[in-house]
Image 1 (cartoon, one colour):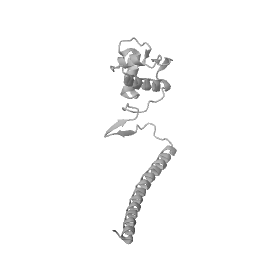
Image 2 (cartoon, rainbow, N blue to C red):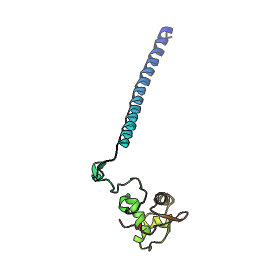
Image 3 (cartoon, helix red, strand yellow):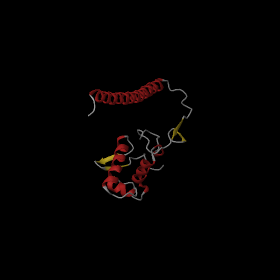
Image 4 (cartoon, rainbow, N blue to C red):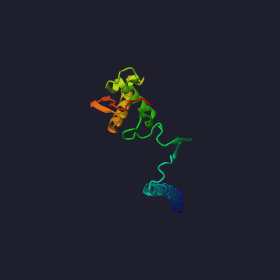
Length: 164
């Protein structure tokens, strides 16, 4: 049978190990928190700087290769449409949606529902694919690239052709 002192020493050792583990976890959490604070402060400083040098085209690195600002990048944000903005600034998936709706698939630029649009994109008209297309089409409509004729029925407004 173990002694009372032996039991207390064992419990003390376990408690010390737990304290050490929690202190290490706390140090890691503080390091993560500090990185977020620094990132927020840096972004605030950058956004507060006056935007000079508009004639210089900055280069943004996406992955390993340099990309000119305004060039389409897969997964990039859909900008709001404005006069003179071409579909080429959109990510490739969005460009394809614009092209299909503009008549690049032989549909003569008619309005399409998301199932037809998915088929026009060469996707199987299964719910998961159709919902992905619907999400992208809704985003394009919300940003002025497409018109939603009726809920779920999309077309390209005149002057916003799908050619990239």
